[in-house]
Image (cartoon, rainbow, N blue to C red; front, side, top):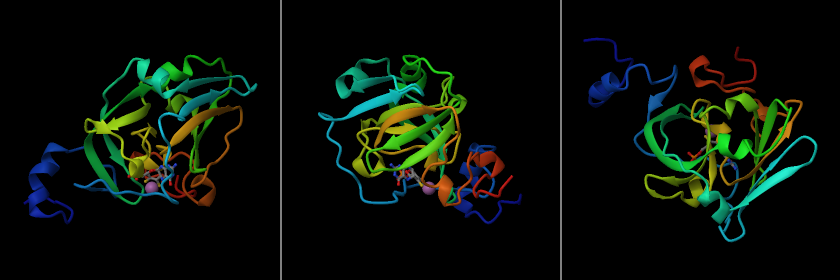
Length: 203
Ligand SMILES: Nc1nc2c(c(=O)[nH]1)N[C@H]1C(S)=C(S)[C@@H](COP(=O)(O)O)O[C@H]1N2
Ligand SMILES: [Mo]
């Protein structure tokens, strides 16, 4: 028998199917764990808005209806949490961040995502463009549930899931990198699951 690294026999077939898609140190999860630093904020779509603010203070905001009128995509992606669960082929619907970021002129290289619960997370702007990230409002064909970040969250599947800010209310473009909630609490600044960038002192 080949080396299954301690996975149960039931996982054998799936392991083959998902070969090469499980980052180091991760295990495949069937369920969808909820991980929130605090209580779940209630954010009605009637008052929801999403704002992109440039480094000079100029901004562009979308209401829920305006956001829903933008071109929509349906990413099917693998997600990876730093607590070691990964989930394959998750199905979302949302707006590519390319569409939203295209509306704002900027020379900044970094972004701070800001959420309705006060959560923040920082990313290089280039990690959010070229079809790599979305503002997601639908999961598995249903409105995204509040505990998973509804009405809308970031979806940045190529980085650990703490970068996918739930209840996101906007992006702030910054010339300098500004570490966010977990990044100032010891998590890695970048968070690439394929390089196991879990903690601040990982390479
Ligand atoms: N606003 C906000 N976004 C957040 C968090 C949070 O506490 N608040 N937790 C992060 C962490 S650590 C993870 S692993 C994922 C968990 O998303 P899930 O609860 O949908 O699995 O959301 C991320 N986004
Ligand atoms: Mo997390």
